[in-house]
Length: 203
Image (cartoon, rainbow, N blue to C red; front, side, top):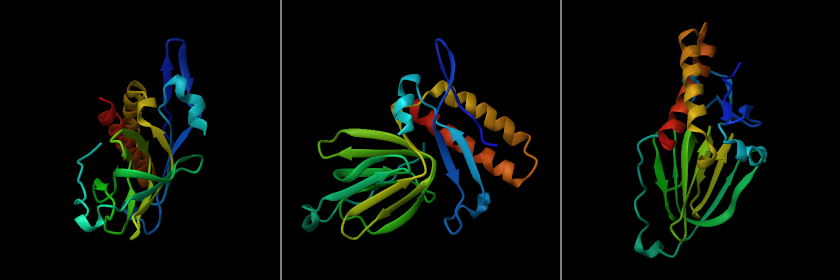
């Protein structure tokens, strides 16, 4: 029984046709929250619904050594329903993880991290930024400067509605206060965390 987010417009309420799935995974460091799958609808502005079908302290990686200055990052970013980047050359990727948010630059130390609900910021070679909200997933940084980010669900940040996020946060807090067992409590906590991250990013 996941929390549902309603997108509102001048003509009434429209239910988003997309879900953000937050899944507990054995061995992923999420055991403390229990084994469960919590679902919430994406908070999308009405004009972004057709597209839909298809936050935290930030730390940064050290700059690459001079000898590695020519190294380029090959970045792949996908969800189960859409590929956002496919081996694209980008300058930097900032990600939210269970161990803290950090920036990935070319020649970054190899690592594997579990994503938490929050904002992924992608900086292209020209310095332009694109921000996405991700529900959960993983990011892998390889020794050859290739990076793979796999999200359970993702949406362009500017397509999300802060009013709907606030309404859903109220529902999640209410669900948390009336939770009857650890599973319900864990689901409510995930929904609270996700919506708080969206609100912080949009305000």
